[in-house]
Length: 190
Image (tube, rainbow, N blue to C red; front, side):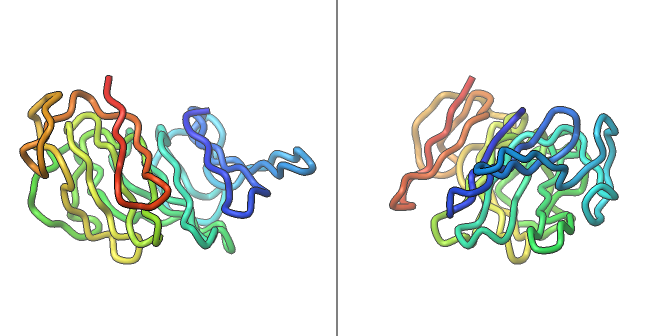
């Protein structure tokens, strides 16, 4: 497994796996089922359940209401979401073309990522924070619209340097967590 997230009610785990799939584990019964992707088949395709394709899903987060998973599809350089009621996989942000994240605002398919890894969902569930380890930045993506901005760091400029916004620098950010009060993001670096 690359990443695991638990539902707000504590009943279910969702796992992003290196075999290009997202799995669901019912904690009480220990039943494991395929939610999305096709085992051992790398690719890119939106769709329902096994008709969707991923390539290197790395980070996974869940909205506070438990309705939506957000996944960093690392090799595809996209941020994807899964509606848990329908298992529909759609692309939230990313062109799929390698690009340096910069301070320009982008929406949905016009946003670029270098190598998105960890995901953390903000307390209110409005945004997904994304550690773009190849771009050396932390991005903020609107879960409703895909609007993407750079929250901290400067594309292509490696750190570690403390600072505000683009004056901060990261060295290969790959881990991300948000404090329980929702006011602070913690970034793990190489």
